[in-house]
Length: 405
Image 1 (cartoon, rainbow, N blue to C red):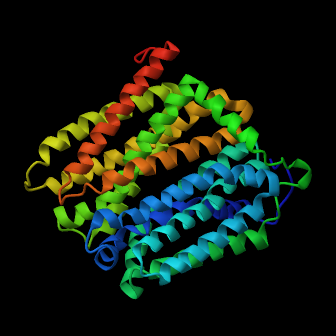
Image 2 (tube, helix red, strand yellow; image 1 turned 60 degrees about the horizontal axis):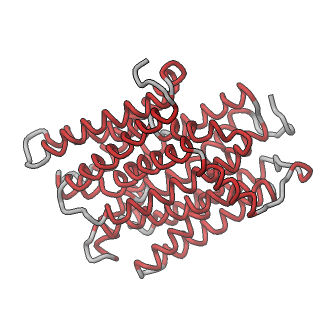
Image 3 (cartoon, rainbow, N blue to C red; image 1 turned 60 degrees about the vertical axis):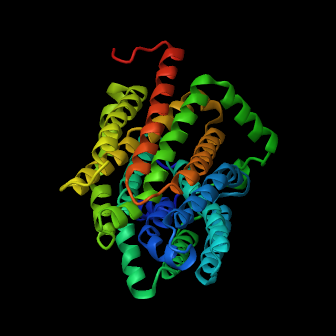
């Protein structure tokens, strides 16, 4: 049932709009993946590690924006924050389209990430404004299922755009995507947070929420584990295209292989939803990270030299990485949110911002270690998963829980 006001959209149209707003982040990252070789050739003297900063700076900007977007929308309304984010996103994309300096393109991508945090965070708030209880869960689940399809198709879409207009044309696609999304919201959906229910923006309250969360051991450790897991995912996204191209000679077909693996691994999110009530969030995260330690260790041994069929082994490992993220990130967010129900909105912004920005900072130097083999990525994943696993065991000990029973 709706909780605030009726709106002219039918349920299907509303879900489609929310899914499109969710997809802003995924499209902005994954559509750039097939462009990395051309960006490296044109702007970084052929260095794929530096070219991957195009992705990292966007994520850093998005993570920083996440800290402020939620409180801003509570203070000024949902739609003004989306509009402001869209202006920044579009203008930054246009600037990056024309700029020839790699450093200035990176600055534009950072600002574009700031702008992209608007629709990603505000869409969640809009759903919460309009629906409650099981209906809210239904809307959220369907929208997120549509959102998970974006990584499967975005690289192929980016490859098509590059084929027609070069890598800079992708920034034009970003402009069109944001315009469609913003105009759709503007004309079809009224403001969902009336002035009487808005809350003033107070830095003191934001800082107080951070202090309270950092003082809680389970919350603190789960944020660190989430940071490590997101670092694992960011390293995969930024380093995987050069591995396809330089190690396995499949750069031309990368978008299709990546899309296939992303599409198949999307089932992990559904599996997590089906079993998390029975098995528990902590157990699933611990098992996922423990399994990845074993798989990454085997990959480190098996990728020391080329052998026939190694590419397909790498595909399976890539699938396992996406599954690790599916069984970890959402559950870790829930673990951190559970004791913070009295400051849930602020806690969501703090958790998302800290974990995303820290993960991007950690991932940046790791991506520069690319050396024409898969081993830097494999070793990074092994270390990150091991640290996360040990911290999960620490959470079990603090809470006095038993891993098996």
